[in-house]
Length: 106
Image (tube, rainbow, N blue to C red; front, side, top):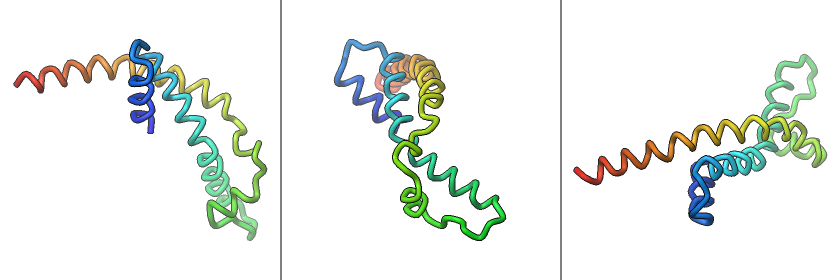
C-alpha cells in the first residue's frame, strides 16, 4: 500500500522530492490501516484474558468499538511513520533509479 501511494503521489505532484512523497505516503498508509490494527490488537489481547467473552471476528470487535476508539493512538503512529517513510523513500528512489538504469542498459 505504501509503494502504491508513493507512486500515485509522485505522479500527481511530479516536482515533489521523493522523500516528501514518501512521508506523505507513509501518513496516508498509517491513517488508512490504523483502524484495522486497532481491531486486530483488541482480538489478540482478548485472547490473553481469562474471561469467556472473547470476540471471535473482526466484525464483532469493530461493532463493539465506537468510531473514535478506532483512531485512538493514530497521532503517535503518524509521528513514527512519517520520518520512517521519509528516510526509506529518500534512499529507495535513487537506488531504484540506479538499478533501473543499469538493467535497461544491458
